[in-house]
Length: 285
Ligand SMILES: [Zn+2]
Image (cartoon, rainbow, N blue to C red; front, side, top):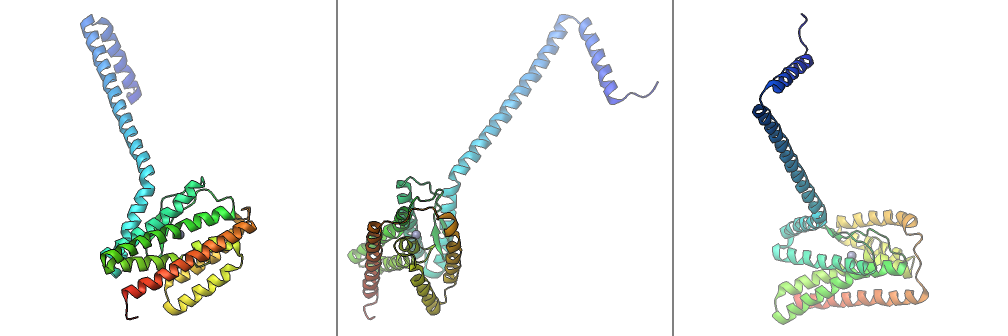
């Protein structure tokens, strides 16, 4: 007799089992059904548990995806604050990060009011932060509104810090305000991707030349590597603008004069605020 294959052995055992089951009294068969039922119940329970487990995981993953942008914000914010803290001390670093957050939320709030979808802000240490637009503005005016919302909110927050500093006579608040004025004024340099470039390009297509001169001058004085990065991004956004922002409706003449006033008005307020906060911090200067 040839040796049994595993499949043949299984079939033979099944057949033997079936024959025994047919001869066995009802009790035994009931027991077996019950056992089988138990197995099914166990399998079902296992399946249900597995499903619940999976569902739980999905819920967790889903939640994680919903929270991910905020986790990204919090994580990059803490990272930025810790890196700034190594230079300016923890309290100024956290104040700075909060001012940057207000600036970014300013962009986000106006973009959302225009019906655009925005991402959560992501902090880039020693560079600031950025908020991504998930849909593009329809006109140069809307583009300017979104760009202007950041420096406007940042200026308001810095003015609040200055007011606290004036009332409490604490240098910390004045120093924070001064830094906030500087950061928001810097962002108004008329070169994309800086906010100023997005506003000024609407009323003056050649404004970027002034921005480029300002960036070059600042680099000449400070040698800050961030300025090179901004210059690189400016070149990149110059090329990209033709492709993505082409169909954007240009500003009307009325909008152009409105944005010229708004742009230079905010630049003037920030310049004056920087000057006065500097005088208060360093009366000898
Ligand atoms: Zn901005």
